[in-house]
Length: 283
Ligand SMILES: CC(C)(COP(=O)(O)OP(=O)(O)OC[C@H]1O[C@@H](n2cnc3c(N)ncnc32)[C@H](O)[C@@H]1OP(=O)(O)O)[C@@H](O)C(=O)NCCC(=O)NCCS
Image (tube, rainbow, N blue to C red; front, side):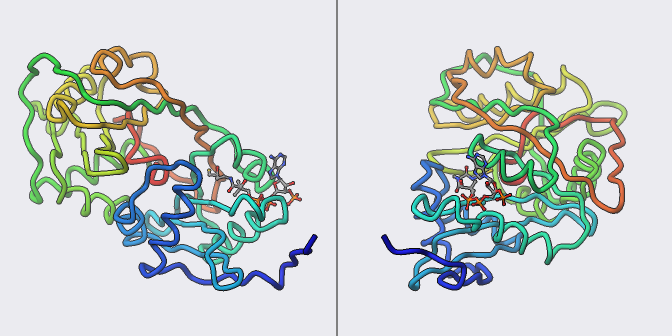
């Protein structure tokens, strides 16, 4: 049997030209990302790839949120090359480049041992639901977000997560439906959706209270009647997935939310909560 050594594999920066090959790797894992989903991610991220014999055999992506935090995502090693230290090499390269930030990620069972060794600790569970959306009852009044709302949306997102996701929010506002709910005190919550994988993904859904979550969830699901929809619910929503299930979105698994604290603490104002992720990659 041929022995593979570290010198057979080179680590390169991942660019938009690599998205077709990267999509091949993620589809090997039965992940639903289209080439467009890789492009969406790499537009606001930096990635590294492992090359062997001219072929992409591994990926790792880091999405910076401001100067103090980032998510790590799309960490994949070709099945034939696992257990040789390549996953660790890729992620360590990313962390070196990005400095002493706080890192967050959603781990699969397969990634868990690697992340624990790198100092990540579990902070919660994510429930992934998906399916063809059935007809749902009409809903309370919500409105469509516009670019004029962007600063308020970024501020509420930051209050919930402690992260500055301006670049992501600026991309999401161009997608539809992006719904918001207001009251006399201002923005009560928002729910973004965008094309993703086999259909659409609903999230982030951020709200000041559970009732706002339910209103936004219902209104967003209604806009997707007849379409394939995915939603990744956080623990804030976990006890309240009845509407999601009634709409035909079946629980199909999930992941483990993990954090590795940075040099600077990340402030979570706590005035709002994240009920659904932008995606497992983007948290
Ligand atoms: C997760 C994944 C990237 C790991 O890649 P890899 O190249 O096999 O990992 P490495 O060989 O670098 O292993 C890193 C460390 O984790 C440990 N490890 C990896 N898989 C392990 C397992 N299943 N059980 C126990 N330890 C494990 C290794 O022993 C190693 O420890 P060490 O550096 O102290 O020796 C790879 O399994 C993969 O692509 N999985 C499918 C995609 C996926 O789920 N990615 C994670 C997304 S969150």
